[in-house]
Image 1: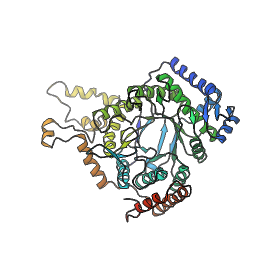
Image 2: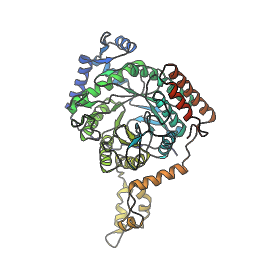
Image 3: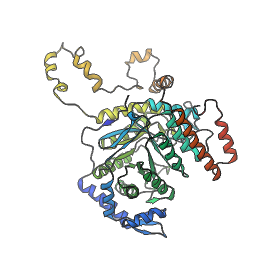
Image 4: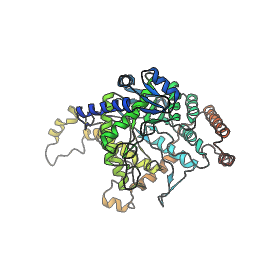
Length: 502
């Protein structure tokens, strides 16, 4: 079955006036030209200089003229295609399309104590299999579901995570970068004949560090799309005001877009709004806040005007377990982002921040994504759905619509029916054991793992992926990033007769 996203069929939410949009646009251009961006990469500075920018090589700072910004915004495509291992799961990112993304987490959680711990290889692989089966997980974020797993040295976490996703899913992939990991990620993608998109992360405020710029060059030159984000915190690494935070965030992601378009004109770019207010009581980001919703909605409105595809980070709640707070924080952010024009939404799996992830949460989020997707698809209004002749036929009481062919045809099209929600009557609920949504999610997960068989890599593809991983292991061992003790533990974890699938 082909993977199906959602299509927005009505005008997106707009919360800014035209004058406010223009004021933010002009402010962004002013910041890029007068304040500039710190660019810790000599090749990038030289490329920008050749295109009319004013670099200061001593300070590693560059000022980008408004004309170049607007030219690169026009040059960036309004949509781009990304190829999956199964062509039926390939995506067209941009326009009015909406896709949901599996979010990353550092660790899994113990469902009895709700405390975090490192995931096992099996837990990582099973999580990928679950999301391969979920119809509303359209692509995988960088190092999702977990930042590596037991026995894997930190420098290999991104690559082992990517290999786990490639082995257990045929859906589209985004990847990160660290210590040149993108070299090996690109080789994996070429081996399988798929597209991968780079998560090009800037450092707020207004900085592109060397590894990020180098990764951008490698991906753009390989003709793979680039996803640009900064991850600012309003009141910490950005102004406390939402309008000021939008200007610094937009300046940062536009600087990344300009660099990508200069490296490879016409390269696909998607910009991400990953902004949260600072929790002034704790000093941590206030994930799931209404301020983040406002920031998302306004930023989306501006980038829709630019015609650049938009990614939103809606997945991270403050709650530490799948409870009422987790549900409303996720639902509000995801709905606002979907209504205001996002093309991709990070949603599934995250339990708290980027710290914890769990497949049961992803199953609950599958229902949430389905509800939001159904909403943005809107209402079909035509002669058949208006049903005036049917209403005349049925008339007042004792007439009813339950036995009509029109009802049998339309009810499943019009309704979204969740899979992990309690929708029983009270007597049915009492008789069935008083199950909660987590109970239903557990049952669905068990069913998926028992019945879903992801399309495996061919023997040749598996051999190539393992060869590339081995090259990376040797590369990092020679660079001193894997100690002898870590390598011994790593090798021991690979001795299972079911490696790499255990």
